[in-house]
Amino acid sequence: MLIRMWQTADGEMAKPVRWIYNILRKIFLSVRFFVGRGHIDYATALSFSTLLAIVPIFAAIFAIGKGFGLAVYIENWLRELMSSQPQVAETVINMAGSYLNHAKSGVIIGIGLVFMLYSIISLIYNIEHAFNEIWQVKEKRSGLRIITDYTALILLVPIAIILISGINIFVYTIADHLEAFVVLGWLLKLVIKLLPLVVMTLTFTAMYVFIPNTKVHVRAAIGPAFIASVCMLALQFFYIHCQIFLTSYNAIYGSFAALPLFMLWVMVSWYICLFCGELCYTNQNMEYYAFLIRTEDVSHNDILLMCTVLLNVICKRFAQGKKPLTALQLKQETDIPIRITTDLLYRLKEANLVSENSGTDGSDHEPTYQPAQDIANITAGKLVEVIESQPRSRHRRLNKKIREHIPSETLSRINTLRQQYIKDLKGVRL
Image (tube, rainbow, N blue to C red; front, top):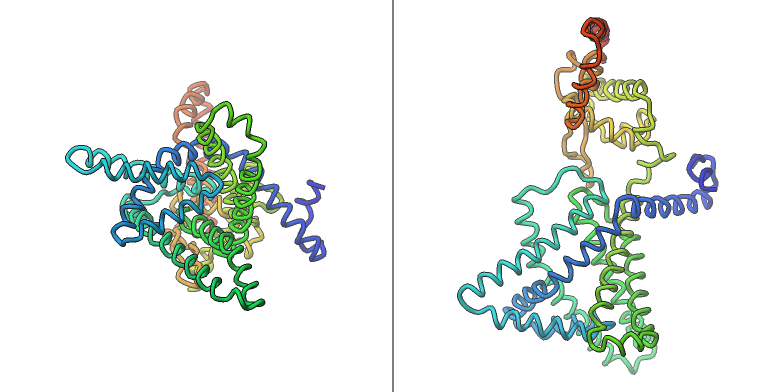
């Protein structure tokens, strides 16, 4: 079943079967990536960062909220959010208030402010790093973007909480006035029950779309965000209704039992968040894993041939004055699997044979590819010479040591033949 799921082309299956197979493929890849990319370790690290930053975060939120006179609404929102851990909610509120009350003068406020900012920025950075690992992002945000994006996030979170609190108050007020109406009262009760799910889905969608340093489609994030929200509500329901089974645990640890249980709840929450992040990635990039082919599984000769085909299409379109293509469009033009197409385009970009430009057509702004130099200089010989002389930095010393074992006459003969081979190929224009 598993082999058939990957070796059967979509055109060979009926639409319902194709739909089921696509869901199974996405779940399989998400589980595989979740385990293979070490997200269990990421969840543990994020849980520690969350515990370290939770009090400074809410201290900052309360400080901003007090400036608008809305601290009470934020407290009510926090109690509602952590209704399954009321002891933890009260502890966080008290500690955040104490944090603000004691950081009032001199060195204390300076150290407290530095620790607050460090804890918050460290948590956001760790979340971004985990999400970038999910999306295989090679380039990080610049220092300026880190400052601007993180500052905006810190300022917008309290405002979002205030808006959510205002919506809750408005809905409950309307519900009180419409209780006499059977249909409207029933609809508002349904809205009130679904409101936490909607708010949580929007929150996860925003995380999956904006935190990774790459373009994430909203339509690819909504489904995983909804699944994450359902799992989080199920976790909260399970936590609340399983308290009866933890009476012996509470009897041993007393009030201290809330801390390890809260830590476990945070860690499972990050498991859910990261797994659904992987589901979002596979949802958007399913074509990257058609037949599970990797560049490592392709022979060196075929890699050179596929690079030749890609360069041929790119150079021809440039010579004809046509618009450059995206990676997906090049895949459709050449029938090379998109995952391999993307890897080869990255190699060609590193070899300075193609350049990547931010797209200007459409709303997705996907990068397009065009020649990075005069197309008259881009030949088969140039391609082979550049691609084959790109050793990774950690292999350069190894290659040098291996060459020491080859007799100088043999090495000279090999180099002469290779130079003649490259010279002949340089007559083949792409």
